[in-house]
Figure 1 (spheres, helix red, strand yellow):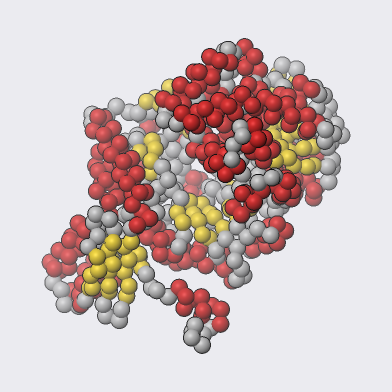
Figure 2 (cartoon, rainbow, N blue to C red; figure 1 turned 90 degrees about the vertical axis):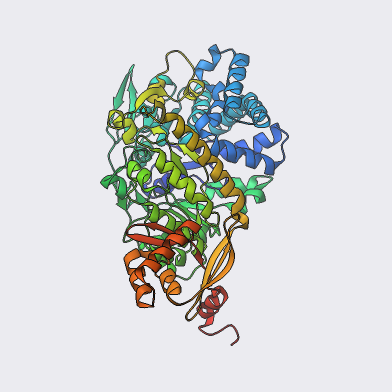
Amino acid sequence: MRLVLVAPPWNSLYRPSIQVASLIALAAKSGGGPVTAEYIYLDWFEFAVKELDCEPARFAAVYDTIGEELYGLGVGDWIFGRGLPAARDEDEEAARAEYAGFLRARGVSAELVDLVLAMRASAPRFVADTADRLLDTGAQGFGFTTSFSQLVPALAVGRAIKDRAPDRLVFLGGANCDRPMGEAVMRAYPFVDLVVQGEGEAAVAALCAAEDPTVPISAPGVVTRAGTRLVVSTPVVQSVDAVPVPRYDDYFRRLAELPCSELIRPHVALPFQMSRGCWWGEKMHCTFCGENGSGMPYRSKPGRQLVHTLRELTERQGVLDTYAVDTILAKDDNGLVELAEAEVDVTTFFEVKANLGPRALGQLRAAGVMTVQPGIESLSTGSLKLLRKGATAFHNLRFLVLCRELGIEVGWNLLSAMPGEQAEMLEEQLRLIPFLSHLDPPSTVSKVRVDRYSPYFERPDEFGIELRGPEAKYRFVHPGEDVDRATLAYSFDHDEPDATDGALLLTLRRRLGARVGLWKKLHPQSRFTYRLGPTVTAVHDHRPHVGRGREVLRGWENVLFRGLTHGGRITGSVAAAVEAGATPEQAHGKLTEWSARGWVFLEAPQGLVLAVHDSGRDELGRAMALGGRSAAA
């Protein structure tokens, strides 16, 4: 059967869809009917720029905001909601007014709300044009990948296809269709012929092998119809060894056709995958995390395949920036050493654990990893224990210091309002943050959510949580009286456990958000570094509001300070200072002073210098790598 795999809005403009591209590569190897990809989120970008008469760079920023920041309000889905069956029964003007009020009440600017309303008005024409164009391909089946805000755009185009050609097959897969959500999609939207719950390789292979849409499909994770009944095949966890390198040719072909392609192309990073599942989640599932759904068991390709994968991707497309979609970097055989030894200028991104030490982070940087997402979540050890992160405040701060030293950009979020949170957990972070302005700040500060598949959702009573039903956005995303929003939803409203100091906690959370806002504002001008001499250490403290300029440490103070650079045991650092001439009381007193000034972070039994090592040897290091000789030679 001839298939078209479709990547709907709001996939990142700068990332080709790895879900679609991996299946395209798999189909090319397995035979069967021809399979092509359509990146209709690029079509939508071009359409919306013209329809809204919007400057492309400005709309790119709007697109990113909707896709990345406003997912929690359902904006991307609602824009395409007129394509759903229930929209026929709605008063569109009333629906627009109600949703606009919903957005404004949650802080969305009036200008952005107006653009959202304009896109909602334009979307039906885009959907109709897209359905016509897809049908013109002659394909017999149309498969849509869905995650985050892609479900309703996929449903809208899928319904338009079925309205025009009822004999064509429309099927969906991806995170929004993982069980039991996939079955709920089938019940709510009868024009969907089939969904794939879980990993889709076996299902697409079966669809390719089928002669036409009337042939019954059987594969793990597939849900089909038998009259009014759903036939469910249980998903299975599949090996990643046979998953091929994604083929992004169709993305780059469409990108080249965009009038403003050069606005996007310089920022494109190629997604790849070395593993599935989460080895930490298998051991200790983070309380708030629902990311892996039914695919938690960890599977990883041999590390030696990393260099091969990146070579094939980058050489085929001429793009040297890459992006790992793995939930977590493999602990051991991850291929980073081989990638570093390849001596290429490929850069990449990984999600990692925040308890990586100097050696592991140095290895990442040597391999060209320039951006990481460590899942820091908090700077309070008490909060981290509640979240089951397997890290402490010491680990998270050491990670931030080392990444700053190595030039690795850190993307992370700060969470609060987790069950069991106490005032002192927030207060200790409020005291600490003014000393961290030189380190990468969090992107957001937010309350923990209750997401499907997380321990908070699966066992709410264990955490004192009372679920109140799907988040408010879902009544706009999936309108209608008979829609089972509780099963379609991924995120849920909840009541926190009663706290005797609830008013105090609310005040502290607001202060935390304000303090992080100041951190982000001060970060570009903040600097806190040290340089090592033969017997002295020069500390340069130019952090706004707390820094005192340059100071030189000598004798036992120099020894004490150096004992805690990159982290060390407090007792060992004190013992070394005593050997250098200090009394124990002097050494402990100095650490207390440095802690009050934000020079060191102390969390027994360990301490950490918060300043960043500035060796001044970057140019020399590059010269040595190039020729093994000094720059002067």
